[in-house]
Length: 211
Length: 211
Image (cartoon, rainbow over all chains, first blue to last red):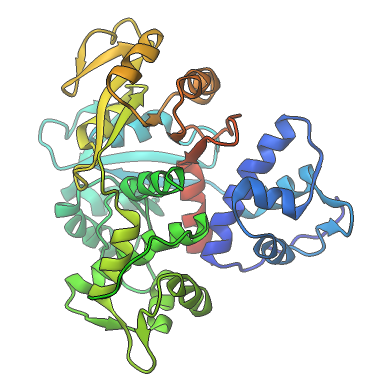
């Protein structure tokens, strides 16, 4: 592919759809399918064809009229956009079961995403190793975040304590936060919080299954 | 609110945005804000105003020109759409750290979403109690799913074993599956699989933080 790719600025909604397209396209590739029309991808993803074509148009001329899109071509373009090229050093806050699941998995599909340190406020956990990671006290956050050159934080802190923990994260200059507690956090405009709300996800599924 | 609400058929994309709107609106309500314009909600959610107005239009006349939308009104309408009114009995497959986090939390914000049984293929776990739940062998799935009247399955089975486990789930007539392994599964057309891909979610966050 000779196209020179500029990383276009696309909306959050488009970016989330790119992840969805990428997953479907990888599934197609695994099944030996080499090209696809937007109408077919629309059926798989339940995203309208017009939206798909508009999303794709951000990345230049990807398809050919009457031919559709080349699956491996799309995978390459969307992977380039979504996958981080430089190492991201990540701190985990909250080492309960969910935190431990994240430590164990540690995004091993992407070598540039690395949880490198963990925090908790439980005296039983502080100073111990959990899943191979030293657990620091939340009180030591300022020193450790700087020392470990952290730029991304994942929080599994429950809603009732999440704002306090996130205030401290933000005070340390972190602007990218993945948050597993569904209650909205107050953060300055320059801070990006991405919420994963498992109850909403399950409800979305059930809504569709009921139709 | 005197409006008679029909549950409209909306797209998956709209439904996912409803969850996002709902979370933002609940945050506004918590902060004492009683009305909002689509342009303001657009800024909060990063969804275009036109999309917001189109999404809202599925639910009848929600807003008034020049006034905007009533926050508590929107919360009621969207909650009615998204929140399950009847009990959903859920089986969990895979009792590792992530599975245990789900068992411990068990969607306690919504009394109608209940994980009622758990499966694993690890002889160390089968027959024991984990987080208060009896763990069954995956081999006993057919009998237990029927006995427990399960209609929804959550799978935390890793990608390499996910297809085999899901084939068995589908063979038992389950049509709603929440899947934490990102690789696409092959399922019949009538089966809904909703994927939660934590790596994609993190990459979406990082993409936005980098802009």
